[in-house]
Image 1 (cartoon, rainbow, N blue to C red):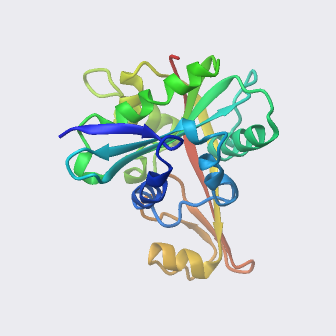
Image 2: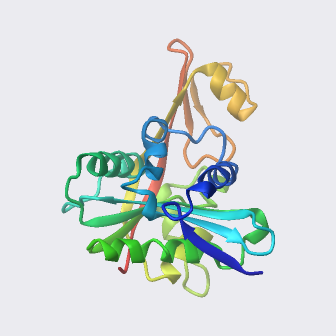
Length: 245
């Protein structure tokens, strides 16, 4: 099973199938205002070189997508992690402003290629284009894949869990750590997802008879429903991690 990697800059013809494949790997509701406003900009001329598309050589099908973005890193990284870095990176690219770091945004792998090391390859592929333009550090607002199965556990506590062999309990955190990443700290409002009551009912297949907090499938944090405002809000936490670059 051989897989080749291409940048979206070199293979713009692969962007559409890559986005279809990547989008199918996430819950329908996981779309923030920042994503709606800025995600398509990742494939504009200034940023296309930082997007990696994986193609199965035998079938010609897109089986992976890695997204990253340069940004200007200061002394601290904010609690609004993923939404913030996407917005800041796109605005910097469009204005030609200085950047000094790269942030991973997502690494989506088709189910047929999970467990093959492709996710690790997508993360590592973010580094050469960053070095090429002189960026000096790499971070990632990481979304722990199994946290949704433990909705009652505090996020930071969950992220600190370790297996008997000393490696992280969560498999996605384990992948990042195996590549040399270390924890910076939680970003507790990394992704803000809002919608109407009707939208949340459609997205989740659930009913919300009263205002309050609800555990919803695949979410890392509770959904807050406000019936009077016809609004549901989910603040998804991520874990800032730093990779060697």
